[in-house]
Image (cartoon, rainbow, N blue to C red; front, top):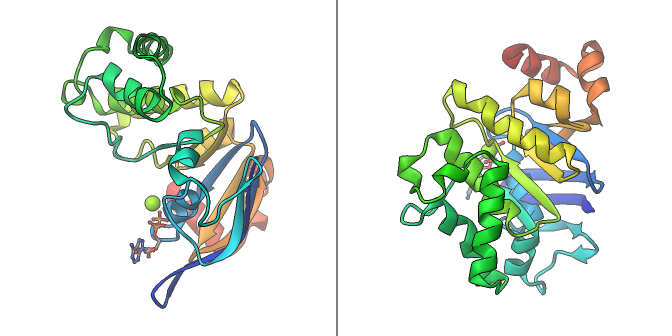
Length: 241
Ligand code: ADP
Ligand code: MG
């Protein structure tokens, strides 16, 4: 469903991505980890066109991402959930979720609201449907953000460190929602350092360092054969596990 083929990207002279290739099949969950500044956010943002790249090719569900494609349309098909939720502060939970379907997909308002409420129920927040983001905890806001992504009926969702801005007691409620999504067959690329989540939910784990993909293997291999991992992967795992 998602093919990243040999992409490289530079900011001026600084190379942020170096010949990266990743394939994600339909229904697959791929966890991306690696040190801060290694290019994880940049890599996943190339998949929905939030970051450009100078070399290589990306194909999403048969569409080659090049200058000629309709990027707003691509973003309706590949959802994204950010570290800092990025909900609209002046809109309620329901309105945050219906905005995209009404504006970008021209959905009927009443149908969009109904769907938003079903999604809020699914993430356990129906009773908070009319609250503004500031009235919700971080974990609740992030669950609204996930519901918002789902409202577009995406073919895949990209998660960029979705729990790293949360207080520890709220991490589980967000990971539980993501685990349910994965079990329901959603195609997901998840940048996270939650290795418990990776162990339970991921199909594959990718380790990126200095803009290069150092490891891309089934999770069993990543965790169970950790002795055989390159030193920088071992070092990283020793710091976070
Ligand atoms: P990660 O998500 O793994 O922490 P990023 O993808 O955010 O890493 O960033 C990778 C590298 O690119 C970092 O060194 C960062 O400083 C640099 N970088 C990110 N955005 C820009 C930008 N707009 N201009 C220049 N350098 C950038
Ligand atoms: Mg990042």
